[in-house]
Image 1: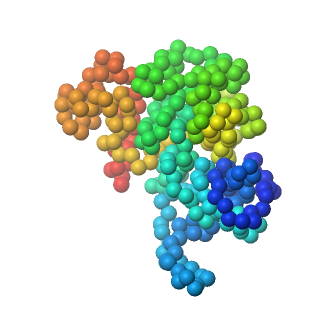
Image 2: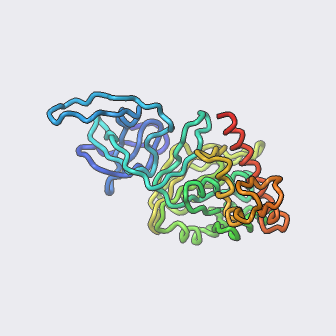
Image 3: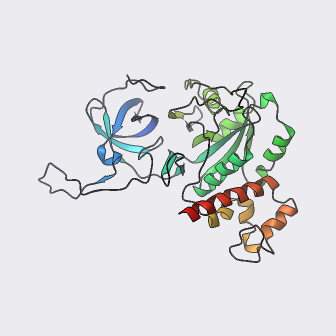
Length: 338
């Protein structure tokens, strides 16, 4: 038994197999194999990113040729397909199979390191609450930019609508379907909107991301009754959610597909994204870029900017433009710092 959230003893690994990582806690992984779950750890090759030379067919030993500088936080994440071999009491993950997609961010406490939130997903459920904690359109737009950057479908999920939807929140939310993002309004308390959400998730692999306290785990519990995830509450004094989800976990949906519950984000630094790329990651900007007078227009003070004209004509939402400028300024500062 391993102490910690929802990691328990699992069957011994007695033979090699390929499975999917469905849960991670500290240095241990739960890998799903058919209908069973196997407790695993990482091999030193993956943990240290080692490289082995081709060994002679008669040799039983492999010599380490090089140790590479690590450029990521975790070599294996939830959603990864991995090859597992028997180890000392637990399975040993010896290979990560090729990924078809990832959702990443810059690691918040480390510089220039990639943190992959989930692998092999089709879409991202961007969870924001109508209130408690307060609605954050700046974080929502960062999440959607991340979706565009990783070629993943973004879905906007507004939670806690049983508390009411403030008028200013509704005005912002109404702008997203016009630029191609589905919006679903939900309440885990009343069940409102859950059927619509199930239809959007059916048959797809989805990762749910958002601030702590926005109700991600409550949604997972409502959609997957056996999940039994711990649910945090919002601090009345600070208005911030408590950080209850510490284990990233993947859950099989009754309607088909999977849903990954990720710990609450406090920030989302875009990974491997340049300032010049940013306008292509706002769909409503992307359609107008060729109409700007100057190639490489930054959409700030340039004359003949089609994007700025669209903002002035209310064809582009003001909050989207403000968030674009804020994100671009951040990316430019990062590039200047090297």
